[in-house]
Image 1 (cartoon, rainbow, N blue to C red):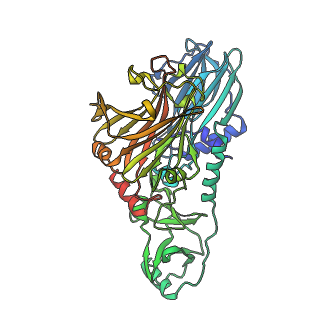
Image 2 (cartoon, one colour):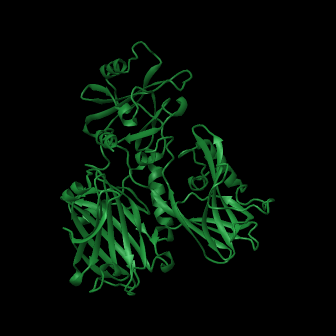
Image 3 (cartoon, rainbow, N blue to C red):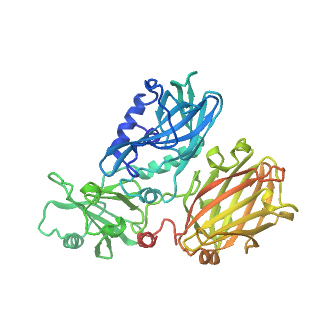
Length: 527
């Protein structure tokens, strides 16, 4: 079973229901969930909102030709935890009458739909490549370090009467970006057998048994011992004979200069005084809490770097491309060139990236963008490449009616929206357009302290803009994480704003990337 297929058919349980996900995946692979027989209740109609019995919730996604496509969510009742739900697509006529065609709901985060023809519907949305990490809402961020999500396209074709789906295909919009990201994720995840490498001093083993409270327990023996740069070694004591119950755990220790201490797994996992099982992967030491899940079940898995055990096991960003701005790691660099070489590149180019003016947007050549963020000295710097078939720099009219960028920042204290305008002679003019506490924002039009340049390219324009980081953090009231949105605005020379397209997410300012365990747990506790 491929990761792509099961991510398309999930049954959510207040965020996750793992056994139901597997069941639905089997149905998808067998073809059982592709289409159903026409509804026998010919008079049944769908209306927006929840049903009277509270079991179903209907949402109309798109109407075109003589059809409407709906998202229908049904409650399945009590599950492993909370309530299980299933979500599927249903097809009706323009008045909401069910026509029979039905299929699994494509799990496209923030996705959009449109009719390409009288009977053909296109869905585009984000699909995460990160493993579902148990019941932990932070699990995805912990595995990778950024939002490893790419756009996927689903195309369905309806029969003449809407009673069946005659074709259903799925594809990644950026297959090369997907292949590279998937390969890097899989290389890090590959499981291997732990070994004893080199000679472990008897004194270290004795201290380890004392720290683990296992004196006299002959079943606990070392299963891994290996040393890394900086003189740090990792030692794992584990049960090597007999059956292992869920309550039994590994004892994982850090050894340096003869000192032996436990890795701070309770702090790392967010639950103290619990048992953890150890597993070894090619680039990571991973730990699963044995009883800290719901109702005493196995809990979340957390991993740290194998090369640097005091750091998180986040994925290297250099050369990677994603379609989501979630958890973007802003890394320190000595120059713009060095920062661009190491930084993650985020793209916006699909109908699901269009936040306003979809009817005016034709395709990626009409408007699309790619951006990187980095920290150079005390500045936050953005490198942005915009593809725009008709360039309209700022002129004498209202600036919002020219091609420009919008940078939207939110923190616990305030919300700031900046307009980045393409002024004369390749200069940028940065304006503060919106500011204030959440829910109390007010429109302004003031110059903002920033610097940068822009230049024309063969397919649009390029922007380099730097913002002083200290006053930005002070205004927003946040040091480590800022909610952020990068948007390109298109006017096509018609003296009006036509399309807004971009990415939303957040900027993470780690002291180093990947962060140390200590920094990660400190920031998580504060946030």
